[in-house]
Image 1 (spheres, rainbow, N blue to C red):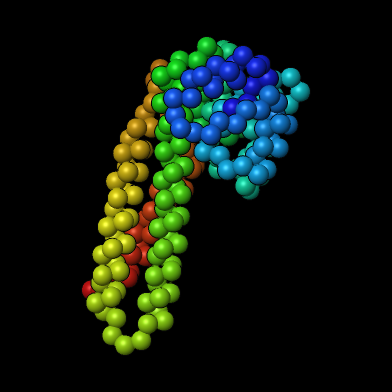
Image 2: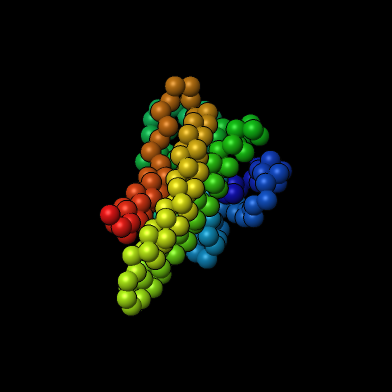
Length: 211
């Protein structure tokens, strides 16, 4: 949560305290960039109008770093963004806007979507690690392994199906009210990356399945 006004950070904290998430406060762009050097974040709430390094400049720095380029950014703005302002924000890496004063329900819904997406991505990484490990074990095994391969493929397929189902439901829930009525939902690189990863993992499991 990045905002130069302490009262806004307090408001964000009060709204999001309903979740069991670790909330990190930053009062400037510089402070946010320092926190991002070591922390692992699901989503960034970033005020647009800040003295010194504003939100757009801060977002540009975040997107240039390999560690943080895929972390979704929701811009916080005191004015309803017009088309030009929104274009600049999305060009800087924003995935959404929230106008002040915050609507608690909308803000919680938007944050929940990206936190769930973060957890699904972590789950996918764990499943991919499991798959690689089991494939190495299968490759080192001696003798007939057709039955083992079938059992392995079935187990991995079942686990992946659960992830795919959760991700489909999550993506459907992405239709949280946007920055303006009728505005198209902006591209979501993190979700696209996760979808591509799921496809690659499914192809690998299909290749493992005995014909």
